[in-house]
Length: 317
Image (cartoon, rainbow, N blue to C red; front, side, top):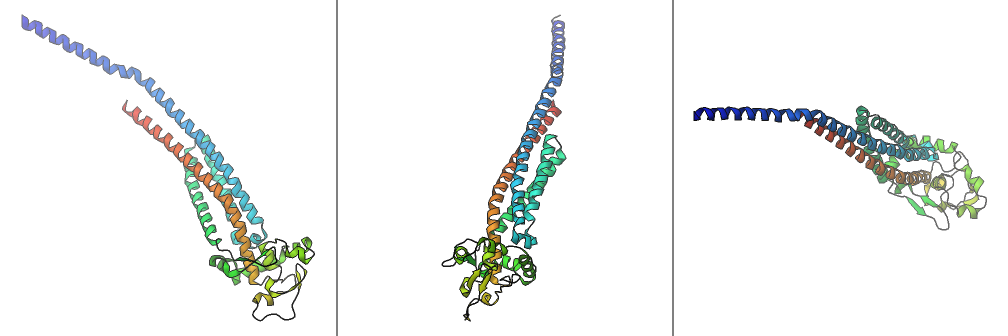
């Protein structure tokens, strides 16, 4: 009799345990839809915040392309760059590409187009690399300065050998110089001097451009006498040991000193001066682009990580 009662109690215990386990198993199923909904809303919210951040930083990158384009237009409009076509459009083209890529990134972030965002991240990394290469390269080739002071003059003159070998080989070589010389002769770079200066004192105390100093007058050491900025009287006796450019000067407005090494040096110094100014703008713009790019990468990575986490959790609920 006692055995039966014990068996009866065991069955009751088993049935109670099974009912309790079944109720425990059913409980998460009633909470799953709500949990999934909350996690989905959280993931969408994080992705939305990430897209807003990426849109803002891409808009800043779009604005940063404007000074790059401006520097490119400024360089391309200069007389020396008009005659040197190989240096004219590089900065302007890079600025326009940064503008287009930033616009693509802004559109992709604002309308949540993952393909455009991936295109933006890839292309912007390449453009930043090209801009950094251009900055370092320009700094290296424009570092040597072949200018020197002339006593009693407000301007400097230039010595061709004082500039970097790369610039001398690619800009002032005989093949390139023939086209550059013709372009300079057809410009008004020297004619402007006759409109700005009348007396010798005015001219000697002025700060004319390196290009005008080298191409529009004979070297000061030759001893030519001033008539006007592009007309000089040759001395009676020229020192045989003087600068070879002294024999190349001509009062012909199509010749002047365009064949002189002083003109080549003046052109290189003009390029150096302009690129040094443009580099300041480019450095600021590149720093902004790098900062924007890092923020965009961080925001996008955090959003994707959170989205993967939420998907992982939903798969194990």
